[in-house]
Length: 129
Image 1 (cartoon, rainbow, N blue to C red):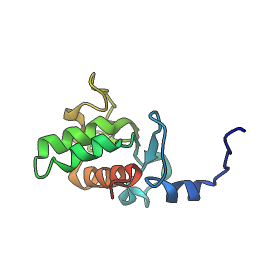
Image 2: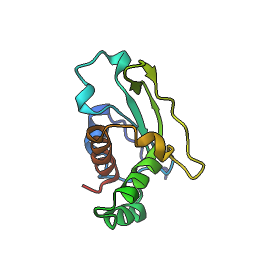
Image 3: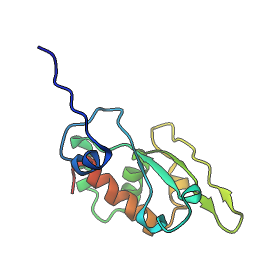
Image 4: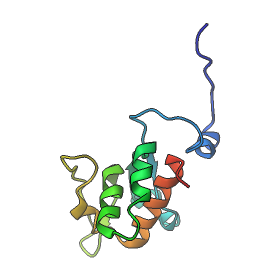
């Protein structure tokens, strides 16, 4: 007897995120809500890899340590596009860290409001909140 396969629409998948198992290579493209009023072609898109259960426990221990929190977030950002630098209007080019995720120096250039939205989304897709 084979595995039963389900066909889910995108809205249902979004609602189930963090509630059902995922594969280790699973990623989610995320645009923070604060950009939704901008034209789609300039909305930043962050490609996020959910934390696994072990990583969630490690992140929960971070507390108020900003450096550890930034590292925990950076490790899960595996790509981005349309991150615009003002006033040059150039794209902030994604650079991977050899240990995984984005280089922390690049993430530190992202405004706190956006970093917090990414953190919140990571918790949601990982089933941490």
